[in-house]
Image 1 (cartoon, one colour):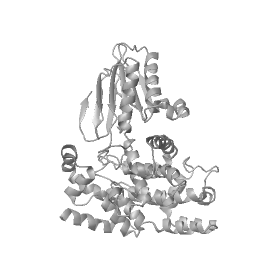
Image 2 (tube, helix red, strand yellow):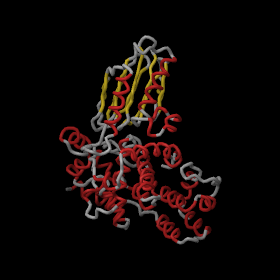
Image 3 (cartoon, helix red, strand yellow):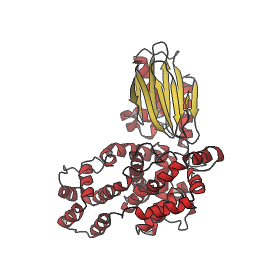
Length: 160
Length: 283
C-alpha cells in the first residue's frame, strides 16, 4: 500500500487500488473525500479558505486553497478517470475552531458553510461528516474500497 | 506541589541564552557596523554559524546573491534578515529533541515556533507597518516552556486530556490544575532567567491569555497570541493541545483586524512556509 500525502491547499486523486490518500493536521481547514465505488476512483482535497474571490490570482495558481475552486478541481479530476457524479460518495471532515470562538475569526464555521452552499447549488449530497469541535484531525481515504478514516488529536479513530 | 518544585529546579539546568544574539542586536544598532567585526562575532559561535550557512540561501531570506560564506551572509542578507537569521539559528538549539509529551515528532514544536514567528511578521507588517525583530524573537520562543514541561505533561497526559475532553478545561487550565504551573508561565520564568525585558517575558507568560496582562499595551504579547492562534487553526500546532485554547476576541478590535486580514495572512503564511523549508530543517 502506498501513502500519498495531500498537503494544505492541495488535492490528489487516484484509481490505483494500492493507494491511500492521507491529509494530516486539519484545524479549521476541511478535507473533502469523494469516491466512486464502481470504477474505484477517489480524490481528497484539503482546502483552507471559503472563497476564491479573496485572491483570484492565488486561486489560479493554487485552486485547492479555496472551497469553490478546490471542489471543482476535485470533481473534475475524478471525472477524468471515469467517476460519475451520480455514483460519487462524499465525506467531509474538519472545520474545527478554538474554544469560546465568539465573534472572532470563525474560519472553521465559514469553511463549513461555504462548502454546504457549493454542494447545495450543485446537487451534491454529503453522505458522512465529522466537522466542528475543537481538535485537529487526520483523514485517510483508501482507494481500494473507499473507506474514510478520521483520527483526532485527542486520540480516537473512527471510520466515517 | 512536588512536581512544580521539580520543574522550577529543572529550569536551572537550561543552557544560557546565546550571548551572540544579544551582541549582534547591539552591534546592529550602530548604522555602520563593521562587516569584519560582525563575522568574527558570529563565527565564534560555531553551531550558530553552521545554521546560518544552512539557511542562508533559503528563499525566505531572499538574498539575490548566493551565500557561500559567513561573510557573504553578513554582507548580502541585509540588516533585517541578518538579525532574524541569527535569532533563528541561535534559538533552534533549545528545540532539539525536545517536546515529549506535547508532540509525536521532535521537529513539530520547532515547525510551529517558526510558523508563529513568520506569522508574527505578517501581522506586524499590517499593524506596525514593518517587521519587528523583538516580536520575531518572542514569537520564536513563545512555547519554550514546552521543552521543559514535556516530560511532566507526558506523565499526566491522560488526566489533562480527560479534563479537556470532559470537563471543559482549556489545555492550559488543565496543565495548571494538574501540574501547578502551565507551559506559558514556565516560558516566562525561563525568559526571566535569561534576563529578557519585561515585554518579552510577558509575551511568553501571557501568550494564551493576553487579556490577563496588567500592561495591556504590550503589542508584542497580543501579536504573539494572535499569530499562535492563526497557526493553530491552520493545523500548524505545537502539539496535542491542538485547538484546546481560548479565543480572546478583544484582539480583533485592538488592531482593527477583520477576518479578511487574517485570511490573507493565512495565504501569505503558506507561501512563507514554503520558502522557509531550510529553516525548518535546522533542528
